Image 1 (cartoon, rainbow, N blue to C red):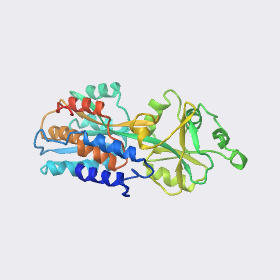
Image 2: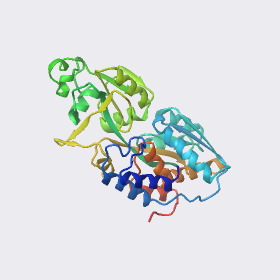
Image 3: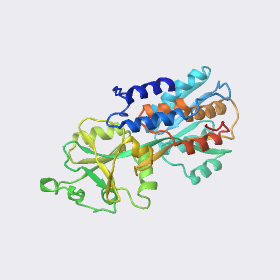
Image 4: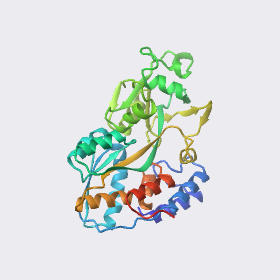
Length: 334
């Protein structure tokens, strides 16, 4: 879908029409929709620097797979001679693949560390560079019948890390009373090598050991299928993940409930947000490397950022987007 058509849809939403876009607009205030529209309108349209005719090999995060396919469809409209091959295999396996294929594009659904970039340099990369291309807000999901409505940072750590009770974890720790108080909590998680788990371990809970899940799954959809069948389950997934029979808890920070709406996320008030990144080697030459750079540039342009919104993510804030475009040597935003 083109950015212009997306902006038209945003206009219809503001006018009161209903159009399902991966959860956006459902329960969001008019101000939030206007904020999204204004932000997208300020991003420069993608303008190719070169005609790409190589093959873009994209590996990595399954969370970013749908967004990458949307980018690929738009990218081919500008570069019909180029091929885009996407292989979602999990964020952590991506680095091992990239070491052997320096002209590829890596999708990693969390921050990329300097240590990881150094590791790629040791493997022969000339100028490994990470680009933040979208943002995802994470939410805490439980079964629809669960009486708990919110979760604080302290409760989040107690439930999802071993800082809480080692055994006998029950819903009383979440403030549940009556028959729910003594019922066990069933933690459901993403697989260990997913970007979600690594983000939680390294950037949210840091030195705390993650609590092992009763089961671990490749995708958010699989996680929510389990939560929908288990009244005692709890899991962390993308805010825009959807599933019947589940509900999302409100987050409590600083003694107040932080709304999990578009405005709070766009303005940085929502505390559980992660960057989604692409990694390429800017030092590589040849058709495939050139196509990879153009692919990243497309993702950072207006159509690419609109595609991120369409699949349920959030665009990059403008100051960071300017900085990322400058890394590519692209013109500054207005």
